[in-house]
Length: 81
Image (tube, rainbow, N blue to C red; front, top):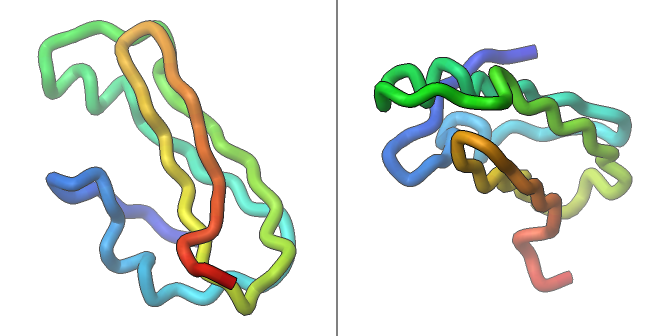
């Protein structure tokens, strides 16, 4: 659907206004390229996050916290509904 690069805060600003319908989505993060820019090797060349959008009326966020040898993901709402 789209390619993007995160900003200095780790966000993809142009996706903030993107509306996703109900369904399954996959985001692939190029962690190898990120760590190569830092001059570091990575155990995970890419991180794939598959998530289900069940309520298209709400705003959600996908967060990835990573280091060269581990990562964790979070999917949650950004609104107070």
